[in-house]
Length: 238
Image (cartoon, rainbow, N blue to C red):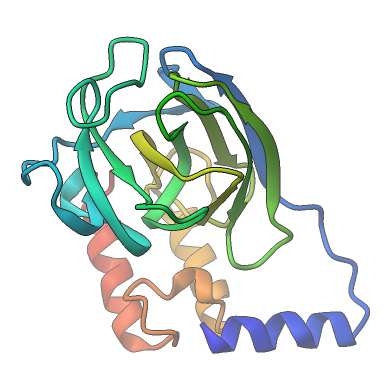
């Protein structure tokens, strides 16, 4: 990712206008999550089959991917080892184990993401929830989380960059869970909902520019291996 930061610095030095951030956020409250966010259809995360009270650093995500935590968390079950949650959710939740901060690295290709947070039982909390795509200004929402209920927050991309991380800072220790996400169709580089020749031309432009949006293998470089990966994605579109 070093190359991306160097590119950003170079753009600023050249005084090129920066477009507004293409991350939007939405407070969802203590209610059942929506089926869509920002026009993206959302899918729930698969069950976490590990035993409750296990220390974990990740959560299983759709299509065999992982959401990773910046620090070790304690796995619970809502309504069981984590007593309160709300709106009939009884799935896995991940306790910060006393920490007031948590950063979640999202699966590659996340276009929209929902997370619910719940303060330690019987406590309310003030939280700031910040989403980053690694290229543009972050989007931050301020949340007042009531006691004994989880509160949902959603983010989605309105531009070319996928969401990369979500960080929560809270006045009390807390747990997160009830994740939903909308994955990107990586070959749809023009973001028009169709994978066609225009996406191939867009790939060539981005490839020639060394744009990290086509770093499909995630090694921090744009090279021939990314071209091969794009051909595979292009031949097997979403």
